[in-house]
Length: 245
Image (tube, rainbow, N blue to C red; front, side, top):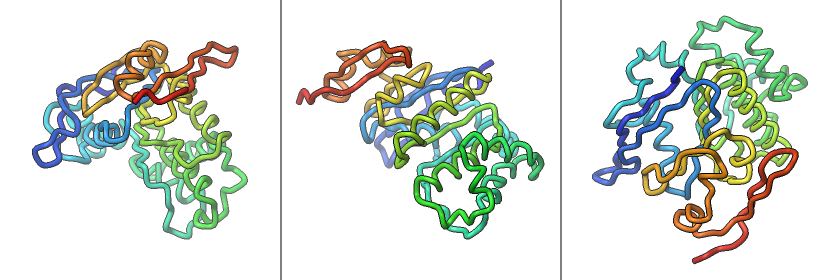
């Protein structure tokens, strides 16, 4: 089942297209990594698909009424700071708002998945920046929407938290949900995602399995680097190795 369908999605800043006629679909069971250099349009694409920015073209989410859209897709934005001195459990429970607050079991599952059970009763403002980021990820998970859109979800996390978060997202996809996440770390993207979409100057220049998208020519043309690939028992490994320009 298709959870997201974009057709010729275009988002402009003034007269300049930041996302330029992008078409793609995301199905159940896919963990899609949005990759590309800074300014490629990754954040704009996610926000345009959700109707958070004025756009042209079509997004299947925009065909839904706002309440139905909130049940269909959860969104994790880049901002990671929690301003309210309330408990971690209270923050995570905000993810149940589209369901009128129902579903304490969903909150429990989200806390457990992100390793936050010991922090349940602590004030979120007392946690470190990385811990607050995990709380906000848990809030998105508590929504239990079929589709999760996450903007740089592992930015600022320590290596263990990065790996665990990517494993959680991969597990969600294995359970039949769809995940789309913008990711700067190409190694993490290659390891965890089932599919990569490479953006450059607002357009999709490659879409497919990680090894195919992270080809020598794509790395050179888009990122200006060369990279090293290897297959390990724990999955594929990718490491940028040098600058070409």
